[in-house]
Image 1 (spheres, rainbow, N blue to C red):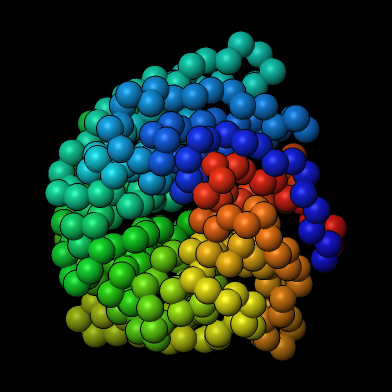
Image 2: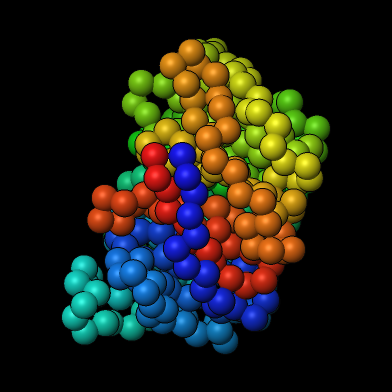
Length: 331
Protein backbone atom coordinates (compact mmCIF):
# COMPACT_ATOMS: atom_id res chain seq x y z
CA UNK A 1 0.00 0.00 0.00
CA UNK A 2 1.26 3.47 -0.91
CA UNK A 3 -0.01 6.50 1.02
CA UNK A 4 -0.16 9.85 -0.77
CA UNK A 5 -1.06 13.33 0.46
CA UNK A 6 -3.79 14.78 -1.77
CA UNK A 7 -4.19 18.10 -0.06
CA UNK A 8 -3.49 19.96 3.18
CA UNK A 9 -6.16 22.43 4.29
CA UNK A 10 -5.30 25.10 6.85
CA UNK A 11 -8.74 25.55 8.39
CA UNK A 12 -8.32 26.63 12.00
CA UNK A 13 -6.21 29.07 13.99
CA UNK A 14 -5.79 26.64 16.89
CA UNK A 15 -5.71 22.90 17.59
CA UNK A 16 -7.98 20.72 15.48
CA UNK A 17 -9.53 18.05 17.70
CA UNK A 18 -12.17 16.15 15.77
CA UNK A 19 -13.28 15.15 12.27
CA UNK A 20 -16.40 13.35 11.13
CA UNK A 21 -17.55 12.52 7.60
CA UNK A 22 -20.93 11.84 6.00
CA UNK A 23 -22.55 12.15 2.56
CA UNK A 24 -19.46 13.65 0.95
CA UNK A 25 -18.96 16.20 3.73
CA UNK A 26 -16.36 16.52 6.47
CA UNK A 27 -16.89 18.49 9.68
CA UNK A 28 -14.01 19.70 11.85
CA UNK A 29 -13.85 21.03 15.43
CA UNK A 30 -11.17 23.21 16.97
CA UNK A 31 -9.95 25.09 20.01
CA UNK A 32 -10.71 28.28 18.07
CA UNK A 33 -14.41 27.54 18.84
CA UNK A 34 -15.21 27.11 15.16
CA UNK A 35 -16.76 24.24 13.21
CA UNK A 36 -15.90 23.99 9.52
CA UNK A 37 -17.67 22.01 6.79
CA UNK A 38 -15.68 20.75 3.77
CA UNK A 39 -16.87 19.36 0.44
CA UNK A 40 -15.02 16.07 -0.21
CA UNK A 41 -16.75 15.39 -3.52
CA UNK A 42 -14.60 17.77 -5.57
CA UNK A 43 -10.84 17.53 -5.96
CA UNK A 44 -10.30 21.02 -4.53
CA UNK A 45 -11.94 20.00 -1.21
CA UNK A 46 -13.57 23.40 -0.89
CA UNK A 47 -14.54 24.80 2.49
CA UNK A 48 -18.32 25.21 2.37
CA UNK A 49 -19.21 26.83 5.64
CA UNK A 50 -18.04 28.08 9.01
CA UNK A 51 -20.60 27.55 11.77
CA UNK A 52 -21.23 30.38 14.22
CA UNK A 53 -18.29 30.61 16.60
CA UNK A 54 -20.35 32.52 19.16
CA UNK A 55 -22.41 29.43 19.96
CA UNK A 56 -19.68 28.01 22.20
CA UNK A 57 -17.63 29.97 24.72
CA UNK A 58 -14.73 27.49 24.74
CA UNK A 59 -13.07 24.89 22.49
CA UNK A 60 -15.24 22.65 20.35
CA UNK A 61 -13.85 19.21 21.14
CA UNK A 62 -15.98 16.77 19.12
CA UNK A 63 -18.28 16.65 16.09
CA UNK A 64 -20.47 13.81 14.83
CA UNK A 65 -23.01 13.57 11.99
CA UNK A 66 -26.35 11.89 12.67
CA UNK A 67 -26.72 8.84 10.39
CA UNK A 68 -29.02 9.24 7.37
CA UNK A 69 -29.27 12.98 8.02
CA UNK A 70 -27.46 16.30 7.71
CA UNK A 71 -27.77 16.96 11.46
CA UNK A 72 -24.49 17.54 13.30
CA UNK A 73 -23.76 17.36 17.04
CA UNK A 74 -20.84 19.26 18.57
CA UNK A 75 -19.49 18.92 22.11
CA UNK A 76 -17.62 21.77 23.78
CA UNK A 77 -15.36 22.51 26.73
CA UNK A 78 -18.09 24.95 27.86
CA UNK A 79 -20.03 21.83 29.03
CA UNK A 80 -22.71 22.09 26.35
CA UNK A 81 -23.62 20.24 23.14
CA UNK A 82 -24.88 22.12 20.10
CA UNK A 83 -27.06 20.58 17.39
CA UNK A 84 -26.95 21.90 13.81
CA UNK A 85 -28.98 21.08 10.72
CA UNK A 86 -30.54 22.16 7.45
CA UNK A 87 -32.92 20.93 4.79
CA UNK A 88 -31.74 17.85 2.94
CA UNK A 89 -29.66 18.67 -0.15
CA UNK A 90 -27.49 15.96 -1.66
CA UNK A 91 -26.47 18.05 -4.67
CA UNK A 92 -23.56 20.14 -3.46
CA UNK A 93 -23.18 21.54 -6.97
CA UNK A 94 -26.48 23.34 -6.56
CA UNK A 95 -27.51 26.09 -4.18
CA UNK A 96 -25.84 25.43 -0.86
CA UNK A 97 -28.11 25.73 2.15
CA UNK A 98 -26.63 27.23 5.28
CA UNK A 99 -26.53 25.12 8.44
CA UNK A 100 -28.57 26.51 11.32
CA UNK A 101 -28.45 25.87 15.09
CA UNK A 102 -31.29 23.60 16.19
CA UNK A 103 -30.68 23.07 19.91
CA UNK A 104 -28.31 23.49 22.84
CA UNK A 105 -28.11 20.56 25.26
CA UNK A 106 -27.05 21.18 28.86
CA UNK A 107 -26.41 18.74 31.70
CA UNK A 108 -22.71 17.96 32.02
CA UNK A 109 -20.90 19.70 34.87
CA UNK A 110 -17.57 19.98 33.05
CA UNK A 111 -15.91 19.83 29.62
CA UNK A 112 -17.68 17.66 27.02
CA UNK A 113 -14.96 15.54 25.42
CA UNK A 114 -16.89 13.49 22.86
CA UNK A 115 -20.30 13.07 21.24
CA UNK A 116 -21.56 10.16 19.13
CA UNK A 117 -24.82 9.17 17.41
CA UNK A 118 -26.13 5.61 17.44
CA UNK A 119 -26.47 3.79 14.11
CA UNK A 120 -30.22 4.45 14.02
CA UNK A 121 -29.83 8.10 14.95
CA UNK A 122 -32.25 7.64 17.85
CA UNK A 123 -29.62 8.10 20.56
CA UNK A 124 -26.85 10.61 21.18
CA UNK A 125 -24.09 9.75 23.66
CA UNK A 126 -21.82 12.31 25.31
CA UNK A 127 -18.98 12.10 27.81
CA UNK A 128 -17.17 14.56 29.97
CA UNK A 129 -14.39 15.47 32.33
CA UNK A 130 -17.08 15.10 35.01
CA UNK A 131 -16.47 11.29 34.71
CA UNK A 132 -19.93 10.61 33.28
CA UNK A 133 -21.48 9.28 30.08
CA UNK A 134 -24.94 10.57 29.17
CA UNK A 135 -27.36 8.93 26.75
CA UNK A 136 -29.94 11.20 25.14
CA UNK A 137 -32.99 10.28 23.04
CA UNK A 138 -33.51 12.63 20.10
CA UNK A 139 -36.64 13.53 18.20
CA UNK A 140 -36.74 13.22 14.42
CA UNK A 141 -35.97 16.90 13.82
CA UNK A 142 -33.01 17.01 16.23
CA UNK A 143 -34.60 19.78 18.28
CA UNK A 144 -35.72 17.95 21.43
CA UNK A 145 -33.53 15.72 23.61
CA UNK A 146 -34.43 13.66 26.67
CA UNK A 147 -31.75 12.26 28.96
CA UNK A 148 -32.36 8.52 29.32
CA UNK A 149 -29.41 7.63 31.52
CA UNK A 150 -26.38 9.09 33.29
CA UNK A 151 -23.63 6.47 33.54
CA UNK A 152 -21.10 7.18 36.29
CA UNK A 153 -18.99 4.05 36.66
CA UNK A 154 -15.75 5.50 35.27
CA UNK A 155 -13.51 6.81 38.04
CA UNK A 156 -11.79 9.49 35.94
CA UNK A 157 -12.27 11.83 32.97
CA UNK A 158 -14.08 10.09 30.07
CA UNK A 159 -12.26 10.90 26.83
CA UNK A 160 -14.32 9.30 24.06
CA UNK A 161 -17.57 7.56 23.17
CA UNK A 162 -18.44 5.56 20.05
CA UNK A 163 -21.40 3.41 19.01
CA UNK A 164 -21.20 0.15 17.12
CA UNK A 165 -22.25 0.86 13.49
CA UNK A 166 -24.89 -1.91 13.42
CA UNK A 167 -26.21 -2.48 16.96
CA UNK A 168 -26.95 -0.39 20.05
CA UNK A 169 -23.66 -1.02 21.83
CA UNK A 170 -21.66 1.92 23.20
CA UNK A 171 -17.97 2.05 24.13
CA UNK A 172 -16.46 4.71 26.40
CA UNK A 173 -12.73 5.31 26.89
CA UNK A 174 -11.28 6.91 29.99
CA UNK A 175 -8.38 8.44 31.87
CA UNK A 176 -8.89 5.54 34.32
CA UNK A 177 -7.12 3.27 31.75
CA UNK A 178 -10.27 1.29 30.93
CA UNK A 179 -12.90 0.91 28.23
CA UNK A 180 -16.47 0.26 29.29
CA UNK A 181 -19.15 -1.23 27.06
CA UNK A 182 -22.77 -0.27 27.61
CA UNK A 183 -26.03 -1.77 26.40
CA UNK A 184 -29.72 -1.40 27.13
CA UNK A 185 -31.25 -3.87 29.55
CA UNK A 186 -34.94 -3.64 30.46
CA UNK A 187 -35.28 0.05 29.57
CA UNK A 188 -32.07 1.01 31.35
CA UNK A 189 -28.46 1.32 30.22
CA UNK A 190 -25.95 -0.87 32.04
CA UNK A 191 -22.25 -1.65 31.84
CA UNK A 192 -21.89 -4.93 29.94
CA UNK A 193 -18.09 -5.26 30.19
CA UNK A 194 -14.94 -3.54 31.38
CA UNK A 195 -11.82 -3.92 29.23
CA UNK A 196 -8.57 -3.82 31.20
CA UNK A 197 -5.10 -4.06 29.69
CA UNK A 198 -3.92 -0.60 28.73
CA UNK A 199 -1.35 0.93 31.08
CA UNK A 200 -2.35 4.53 30.55
CA UNK A 201 -5.21 6.78 29.49
CA UNK A 202 -7.38 5.23 26.78
CA UNK A 203 -7.94 8.07 24.34
CA UNK A 204 -10.15 6.51 21.71
CA UNK A 205 -11.77 3.31 20.45
CA UNK A 206 -13.64 2.24 17.32
CA UNK A 207 -15.75 -0.75 16.35
CA UNK A 208 -15.27 -3.03 13.38
CA UNK A 209 -18.21 -2.98 10.96
CA UNK A 210 -19.27 -6.62 11.09
CA UNK A 211 -22.43 -8.62 11.65
CA UNK A 212 -20.61 -11.87 12.33
CA UNK A 213 -18.43 -10.74 15.25
CA UNK A 214 -17.99 -7.88 17.72
CA UNK A 215 -14.51 -6.37 17.79
CA UNK A 216 -13.13 -3.08 19.03
CA UNK A 217 -9.80 -1.32 18.50
CA UNK A 218 -8.40 1.03 21.17
CA UNK A 219 -5.38 3.27 21.70
CA UNK A 220 -3.66 4.69 24.72
CA UNK A 221 -1.02 6.80 26.43
CA UNK A 222 0.96 3.54 26.69
CA UNK A 223 1.68 3.91 22.92
CA UNK A 224 -0.14 0.67 22.06
CA UNK A 225 -3.04 -0.16 19.74
CA UNK A 226 -5.11 -3.19 20.82
CA UNK A 227 -7.98 -5.22 19.38
CA UNK A 228 -10.64 -6.70 21.67
CA UNK A 229 -13.21 -9.36 20.83
CA UNK A 230 -16.59 -10.29 22.27
CA UNK A 231 -16.30 -13.92 23.38
CA UNK A 232 -19.72 -14.74 24.78
CA UNK A 233 -22.80 -13.30 26.44
CA UNK A 234 -22.38 -13.51 30.18
CA UNK A 235 -24.84 -13.85 32.99
CA UNK A 236 -26.76 -10.94 34.52
CA UNK A 237 -26.17 -8.78 31.46
CA UNK A 238 -22.37 -8.87 31.71
CA UNK A 239 -20.59 -9.98 28.52
CA UNK A 240 -17.21 -11.63 28.19
CA UNK A 241 -14.63 -9.76 26.12
CA UNK A 242 -10.96 -10.63 25.65
CA UNK A 243 -7.92 -8.90 24.24
CA UNK A 244 -7.35 -10.53 20.85
CA UNK A 245 -4.27 -8.68 19.56
CA UNK A 246 -1.70 -6.01 20.29
CA UNK A 247 -0.92 -4.45 16.93
CA UNK A 248 2.73 -4.13 15.80
CA UNK A 249 4.53 -1.40 17.69
CA UNK A 250 4.77 1.75 15.58
CA UNK A 251 4.19 4.66 17.93
CA UNK A 252 6.77 5.99 20.35
CA UNK A 253 4.43 8.17 22.41
CA UNK A 254 0.73 8.48 23.22
CA UNK A 255 -1.70 7.28 20.54
CA UNK A 256 -4.65 9.67 20.43
CA UNK A 257 -6.95 8.22 17.80
CA UNK A 258 -7.84 5.03 15.94
CA UNK A 259 -10.29 4.50 13.08
CA UNK A 260 -11.49 1.15 11.68
CA UNK A 261 -12.54 1.34 8.03
CA UNK A 262 -15.41 -0.71 6.56
CA UNK A 263 -12.72 -2.32 4.33
CA UNK A 264 -10.99 -3.74 7.41
CA UNK A 265 -8.06 -1.33 7.70
CA UNK A 266 -7.15 0.30 11.01
CA UNK A 267 -5.47 3.72 11.11
CA UNK A 268 -3.77 5.23 14.16
CA UNK A 269 -2.06 8.49 15.03
CA UNK A 270 -0.83 10.44 18.01
CA UNK A 271 1.60 12.73 19.74
CA UNK A 272 4.60 11.40 17.78
CA UNK A 273 3.07 12.68 14.52
CA UNK A 274 3.07 9.21 12.96
CA UNK A 275 0.17 8.02 10.81
CA UNK A 276 0.03 4.22 10.59
CA UNK A 277 -2.28 1.83 8.72
CA UNK A 278 -2.67 -1.85 9.63
CA UNK A 279 -4.32 -4.82 7.91
CA UNK A 280 -5.15 -8.30 9.21
CA UNK A 281 -3.66 -11.08 7.07
CA UNK A 282 -5.20 -14.46 6.28
CA UNK A 283 -3.56 -15.97 9.37
CA UNK A 284 -5.25 -13.42 11.63
CA UNK A 285 -2.05 -11.46 12.27
CA UNK A 286 -1.98 -7.69 11.97
CA UNK A 287 0.65 -6.08 9.76
CA UNK A 288 1.69 -2.48 9.18
CA UNK A 289 0.89 -1.79 5.52
CA UNK A 290 1.55 1.97 5.42
CA UNK A 291 3.33 4.46 7.62
CA UNK A 292 3.83 8.22 7.39
CA UNK A 293 6.17 10.02 9.79
CA UNK A 294 5.71 13.74 10.45
CA UNK A 295 2.21 13.53 8.97
CA UNK A 296 1.70 17.16 9.99
CA UNK A 297 5.32 18.21 10.29
CA UNK A 298 6.41 18.76 13.89
CA UNK A 299 2.84 18.88 15.23
CA UNK A 300 0.94 16.31 17.25
CA UNK A 301 -1.85 14.62 15.29
CA UNK A 302 -5.12 14.34 17.23
CA UNK A 303 -7.54 12.56 14.92
CA UNK A 304 -7.83 10.21 11.93
CA UNK A 305 -11.05 9.33 10.11
CA UNK A 306 -11.76 6.99 7.18
CA UNK A 307 -14.36 7.88 4.59
CA UNK A 308 -15.41 6.81 1.10
CA UNK A 309 -16.33 9.35 -1.55
CA UNK A 310 -17.37 8.22 -5.02
CA UNK A 311 -15.96 4.75 -4.38
CA UNK A 312 -12.58 6.14 -3.39
CA UNK A 313 -11.13 5.54 0.07
CA UNK A 314 -9.76 8.62 1.83
CA UNK A 315 -8.16 9.09 5.24
CA UNK A 316 -8.40 12.46 6.94
CA UNK A 317 -6.08 13.59 9.72
CA UNK A 318 -6.18 16.68 11.93
CA UNK A 319 -3.47 18.21 14.10
CA UNK A 320 -2.35 20.90 16.51
CA UNK A 321 -1.50 23.16 13.55
CA UNK A 322 -5.23 23.51 12.80
CA UNK A 323 -4.95 21.72 9.47
CA UNK A 324 -6.69 18.75 7.84
CA UNK A 325 -4.59 16.50 5.63
CA UNK A 326 -6.41 14.34 3.09
CA UNK A 327 -4.64 11.10 2.16
CA UNK A 328 -5.30 8.57 -0.60
CA UNK A 329 -4.07 5.01 -0.98
CA UNK A 330 -2.86 2.77 -3.78
CA UNK A 331 -3.61 -0.82 -2.82
